[in-house]
Length: 215
Length: 256
Image (cartoon, rainbow over all chains, first blue to last red; front, side):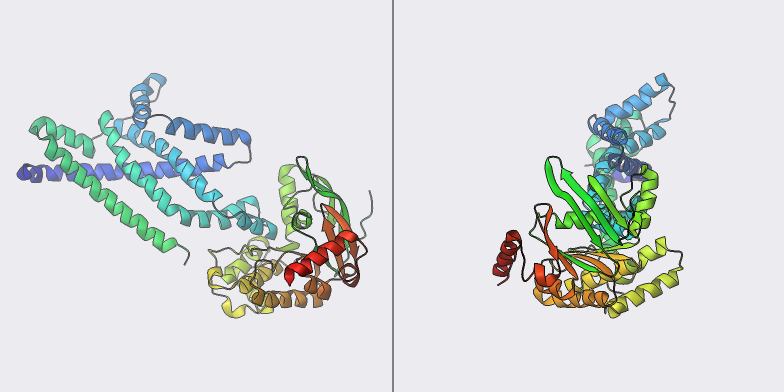
């Protein structure tokens, strides 16, 4: 194993790791927005809105994220959507992650005891006040860990955008293989950096979970 | 339009789940300051009737009136929401499983609804919460979380939470059924205190002794109908209906 080479290219990988982190943060943010909207739709009192929410989840969980990225990035221009690779990556992965988060968030909300909603409505709170003051604060606490799992998956999924040449960690590894012919070292280095990112994220999620848990 | 001279008036209440009829044409009047107990085995429809009063379980037929206003008015969704929220502010409800908000302190549990719904400041709402908690003997636990309380204490906080909205009517849905026997009395004491203050109450209960001691009137329900109704000393001690006698006999056997 060529340790010396790994040390030499390490700074470039580190820079790429920051792109992966940025990609993950933006994707997670967009995913969370999509997830909240999706879950709201899935729980709407209007059947058409519930249907749209369910369709969103089926479509984006039912097809490979890579195909979704390809359609957006390569197919987009054909229907008038011009995005650079990074934008396409964030939007494609964000919408995809949102479909998974929709189900996570919906699960968290419906797991809150029915009596909580009843107690709040009985006091005279509106639907929205009940959701905002009683249901969501409890669901949010329950959701830290499951959304942490979504986050873990999403970080690993950012590797897919190498296929549309976003210069993140995986793409950088591939590029250096082209010039060094050392796939083992290059992918190993990328893998270690992914692991560090995911480990740190996991610790952060566990910390947040402890902090917000009721008693 | 018919006149509504009673404080609470339930007219021809009917409720079905598909083919299953759980309330069959029930009418009931309650006067201001009266305390009415509803007894009956599980599945008799007594909780459903109670939950129909604040429209938590909407009726499929019939009307509920409170103080001259129809609770279950037929209105477009938006207007209905506004109407029912206003009505519910006047109807306190206490549940078997307390349903305290676990993410809020005792104070916040009690102060939240007044803070949101009444035109009062945060300080005033907190003051109101303290008063109500004092009333149920829970003032010293004001900064605790529900998980740090016993069942009896939780239920007393739940009562304070309902009272903080200054309701005209209180509904109790088996308020002591989930409590350990030694904790029942403290909740009963609070309910007795409310009775002495002439709060109008409708109480669904399994406790015949308690019903006998606080209720002005007791209803025995079975299979969605009111089988027998009258003063507690008649319904509980000298019932005229065979079904009531059977229920009470089984109940005493079960309790002993």
